[in-house]
Length: 212
Image (cartoon, rainbow, N blue to C red; front, side, top):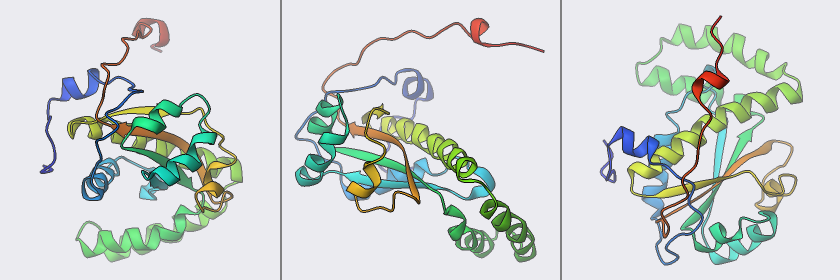
């Protein structure tokens, strides 16, 4: 278990989560702990373990100023949070496939022959995807990591706000990424909450579920 974890209560972490829009502006999260939380979040599943999620942590005043015009009505989170985590999906994630599978072999989690067999199938398959198909795959997988990061953050004593309202056509290039390769998925504000957050409601499971 992480040395930074301050809360390991599953119910409190999961069902106590709220979207926080106002943070303690003076509190900063160390790079070490931020990387630890991201590492924990990336134990989320992904299709054939291609791990398409990529993260940009925007924390300096200069970089937050670049982000501010792109996030519409979410500027208070940008102004007060410890950081804004930009989550992108890598449309060429398969280029790291061999590195991922080689690591699995080195760590004794996969036989070398299985690695070779799987990569011979997976890499051409991924390369055959249409742009829309790949976009769908990387966004679904990266969203799983984003949700896990929100819960991991709570275990470390922080809160978050998932933000979908931003100029997605400008985000990658503004932060030096190839916009054709890296598609924006979500922005997470993260920090020490200064508010308790709003109560919200959910539709009953019976209303949104069919049994066949």
